[in-house]
Image (cartoon, rainbow, N blue to C red; front, side):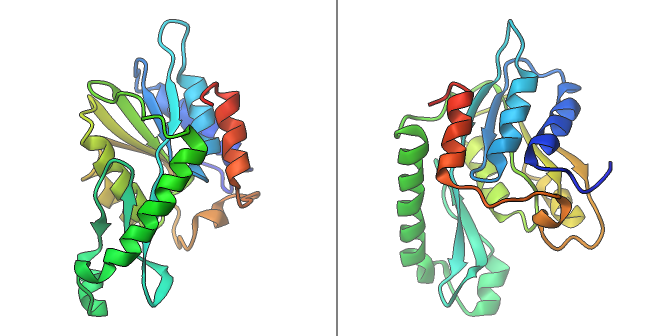
Length: 219
């Protein structure tokens, strides 16, 4: 696999080609906003067929930050799921889950805001008995992906797949315990951040997400 990817759209098309080999019929493609949405848009389009369209939507997640240093993630939460915390890290920081009640509440409120913006609060597609693909633009620590997979698993999918263009090897290995399949195009050495593996890795806005949802006929 030649790196870097040109952008998220190219990465999504390449990822879709790999996923097509799984032969999934009528999958639900859930993209993690914001960065996963351009990737998931391409995946859903490629996997749709005249007799079995792929459903496409967003699955909203939020990082749970260390209260004294919010950029340090100590867990994550996804809609429909419970907080997934890094308990060993909390112990090293001298924290308990109870110390995060206010932080979790704030992230739930932001998650609800984004659900309202992206989907007008309509529910996710029914996942029971269907193949579900959770898509993001990359996998670094895996905190939000883990929370997303556990939330989706509670919906009873027939098969749960995590698909990312690029990921840190140790994180990819850990995610194999959470998903039935993990599809990743590249696991480069010296992985520092997802953005280093893209030539163009712009920060996306809510409007960017909404435009792609409208193009997909979701909004």
